[in-house]
Length: 372
Ligand code: MG
Image (cartoon, rainbow, N blue to C red; front, side, top):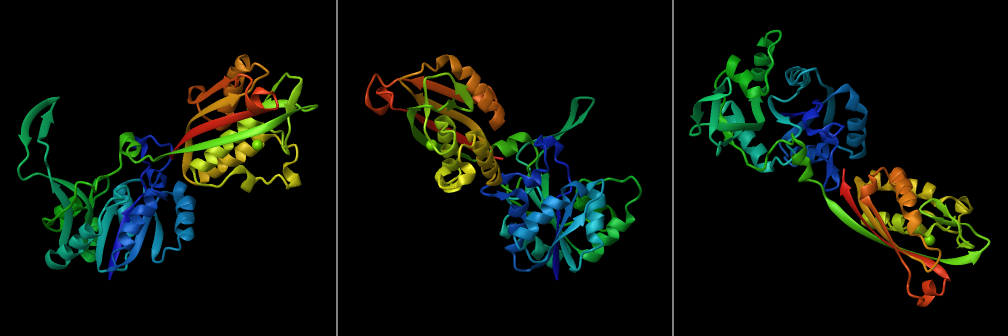
C-alpha cells in the first residue's frame, strides 16, 4: 500500500497573497485541487494525507468534501514543516510513503511513478534536477567557493519506506528543524537515492510565481433605457439633476447595468436578465448598486476579481462630464478597485438616432477580470 503526504500547512507569507497559497485559483481550480488531482491520477496511491493549519481547516475541508475526493484526509499541521510531517507520518497506513510540497502543483504522473519505482528498488527516491546555475557558498557577503557539476536542486516528491522515515523522524532532537525529508533520512538512515525531476515542477513561493498563473478574461456589456418625465436619472448609483429620468423595472441605472453585464459575460455567468428577471417583484425599484454587489459575489465565487472597467455613456443631455469623478469614485468604492481602474467617457451622438433625439441613454462597457 502506498500513501502520499501533501504538506500544505505553511502560511505562505512570502507569496504576499493574504491567504494560504494553496487556495489560489488558476485554470478554474485551487492549487490544493491541482496537487491532489496530480496524485489521484496515479493508481498505485491508496491514500492522500493533507496537512493543514488550524485556520485553513474549514476551507480545505469544504473543498475536499465538495470534490467528493475518496481517500483524502486532513491532518492538523504543526508549527514547523518537520512537526507537520511527523504528525502525518503517525497516521500513514501505507508501507511506502511519498512526501510532497503542496505548493508544487505541476508535479507530473511520471515523476510520482519514478519516485515509487525508486523506493521499491533502492529504498528511497528523492526528486532532483541538476543545477544549471552555478551555486556560490558565501561567508560575510563574499563568495568563498562555487559549484555546479554534481550539484542538484532538490524537489519533491520524496519517497521512502514508511518504517525508515518514521524511524528517522523519531530520532530528531528537540529544536532540530529540517526544510525537507531527504535531510532527515540522510542524517539518520542512509544516503538517499536521486530520481530525475522536471524543471516545471517548481514550488510556488514568490508573488511573481502567482502573477504568471493569473488568467485574464474580458467581458462586454451594453444597455439602453428610455428617458421619460417623472423619473429620477441615476447613473452609477449617483442621482443626476435633469428634467427626465430613465424608465425601467429597477432604478434603470443604465451604466451599472452595462457594467454588470460585462462582468457576468467575462465570467461566462449569463446576464442580468437571467439573474434578476424584470418579472420578479423583488427587483421592482431596487437600487442597481445592490444588484451590482450580488454580481460581484458571483464573480468572486467563480474565482475572479475585477481588473479594470471602461465604460462609455452615450447621452445627448444632460451634460455629464462634471459628474464623472463623483460616479467613478463611488463605483470604485462599491467594486473595491482603485479609482484609476475605472474609466468612464461620455459622448453625444450629434443629434442622431435614439440617443440623439434624447429618447434614451445608452452605455457600452468593457471589463477585464483576473483570477484570484
Ligand atoms: Mg437595463
